Image (cartoon, rainbow, N blue to C red; front, side):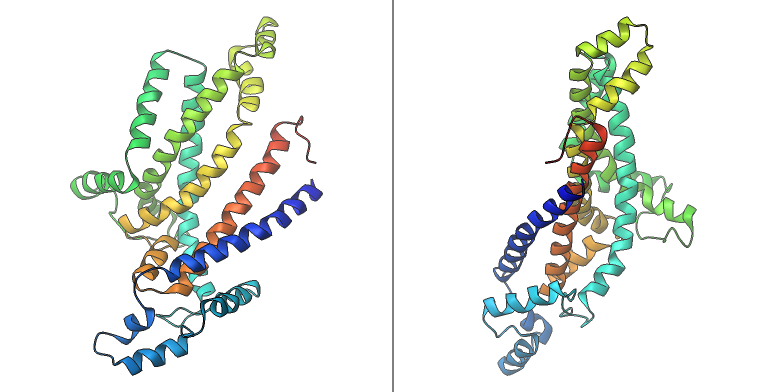
Length: 314
């Protein structure tokens, strides 16, 4: 197991390197000049050039990349063009609200997706099965921002049941913090549950037709015990990858949801940085997300071996 983890971490090095090159290069193609934005509309060409030199934007692109990636390897992602604060500090402050939202949304997705998928997978062509199909089609078809705006209008504005935006840290007031989390977490969780439930339904349906399931039933094992002890464990093995990808999708989906619900977090930080051409913040945030995706995939690999002892790491 340890050897496998080390091997995967070594394999992640070229992936991170290629991702850093892509992130850095694509931002250089974005229209607009950060120095011009910082200088303002009334600044002279000389003022703009001074700002470009101060930010290091006058250097060749390759030299800028080496300087940035060298700092990143030392844990220094540079300073924000706008606030002059370290990017690592900005990311650290924005990470807590995003993880808070992601974990709550993931809990909703996991519970709904697995429960609905198992119920439909063990009751093929029943009312449960048809209902799940309708739920997944609607959930996948509706974008995050549309569902978010609908819930904001009806639940938050019209009915006034929940706050329509902002955030209260759970460490300060858990009850009030959860009230602010419910709507954005539901938007992320319901969409993810639609995708997960469809995969769980297909996987469970295939497992329930296996010979060992029929043998367990022939021995008199109760239906629920057959599903939990044999069907669920074996059926969830191929779903692990989907769960890992869905967790990664929640992180990216939070970019939209945080802006819809005016929540602080990495999503709002990135959008604001893009609008201001704040390259160091965008580059640091995207590099952090890539690293997060790699860690999630590594965790999924480890879970394969835990759920299915037949899988051996080589």
